[in-house]
Length: 243
Image 1: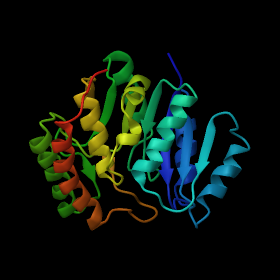
Image 2: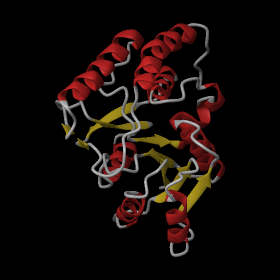
Image 3: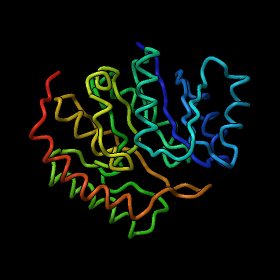
Image 4: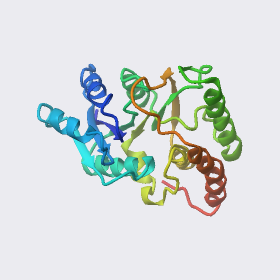
């Protein structure tokens, strides 16, 4: 069946990190975990190192100097996963906005529906977001509408960050050519996967806003998404997407 790896980037997640790791390790399937910590000053990395003492073979960590961005964290994790022969590679937040139990459903989409990319989708069956202010819900929803309009993708939740990739996708995508580094990184990865012709399946999830710790969202993130998507679409006309 192949090994599973859940990649979780962290920056100041001491309130959540131990609980999310334990919740994943208690699932009825084996999901190994790779934490990518950007030098969290709150001691997130120390908590992970302590947990590694009792979960030596299943809990891994890459420590980086300072905040280097979500996209670079995931790319570092993808390369590590490929080098270490994982078949199914997951992206997940540390703050319980993504339900660990839904890892099973994303995995099943790859196993049973032959998905190359399974997306935990907030918008495939209505708007399934809990504890977000209405302004943020509307901004997120219409961001996906905008991305669909510009790119032509038929994906309902284009900015989703809860996903499962089959290894072949990450081996095919030229990871060093991915330009967008913030949350728009999620859009570019989906767009590139789609352009290569891989099968994408959206799995309905309920997204719950974090209860512990501080959100990492900012206005700059949305600026990158707006202009980055246009540049991404234009540059795609000059690229070859052949597996």
